[in-house]
Length: 455
Image (cartoon, rainbow, N blue to C red):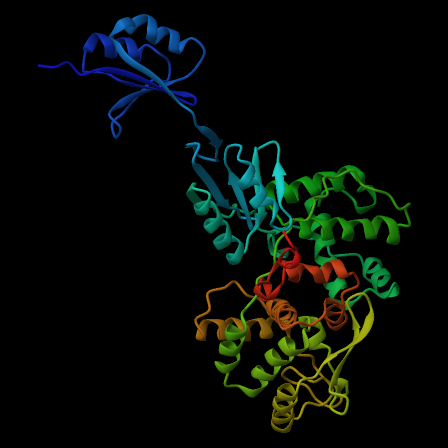
């Protein structure tokens, strides 16, 4: 009977040993710390710690018929270490909407990654990343396959967040001081900013409920910021806004010097917006039977409005002569004009004839000529949520997605970025340029200068 060979393979930080059953050999292997039997692969796994390889060679000697080394890339993950062959790429969709890539040195693949907007190299984790979008994911998969790599794809689970405590859960809950609110109003902060700042400052106050307000200072700001990141696991934009709300108290209400608090203020993640196709927009609007609900979504989409701008629209802001919508005191306290399309005007006329609003273009329940009531943002979100469900669209779209889609569709139809910037009310052209990274329509029409060269 032919004896089974003894083989040893060195794979990263593991020594993989295959031996025939022998009680004396097994006893020796078990004497090595952390050695374990892998019943699925039918071999022994021994940590490649200093000295272990020499122990095995010394014990088995000439009985080892082969010793091989398999080059791999070790990728430490939360619950495991992933071993990648040289021809493999590990791609992880992170909870922060980025695609993170691990692979060995390969100039062509690095060039591909660098062709995407907002790419980043993480020197600590030895990985590349780009913003996530369905389009980028499919393009990367195709490029990886073309270069002869095998893809290992994983999706990262969203981190468990500590929810913000409600007023009822905190004994002796401290409300935001009236002077804080008065100062916000005095400095003419928008209604939206006031609604955001007040609960953020209250969260800070009640995190230190035992410390008197006048004794709170820089140390508490730093501790609270760390709590938001490490325990609440909030987004970078939430953390930034929370710090700004706290700074407002110390600098504007208390009258302290403007200063930088030495906290880990995060760099905002470069995330591409979700965009609906023109076909998906059409399906959403067709699924809505209620004329008021349809008028709300078609106005937001066709004019590229923020939800707060739609809520604040007055009937008099609709200029059917010039086919424009006037947006007053929008973000940054700026007025602007945007498009009033023929189809939008037709829907609005039917809606106004049926509903007869008094002052605001869209009014909530209980509104009257003497006391007009604005339509609520939560109701608008609910309208879109129902429409997405009815039209069987799985994308994680919000009301703001309609605005992103409006801008992207304009760009795809050849509208100059400067006009899109004006219609959206962006202060910086850099904000508008994000839409050039969302679409690839029209690329096939671009004529390369190379085509005209005599080479």
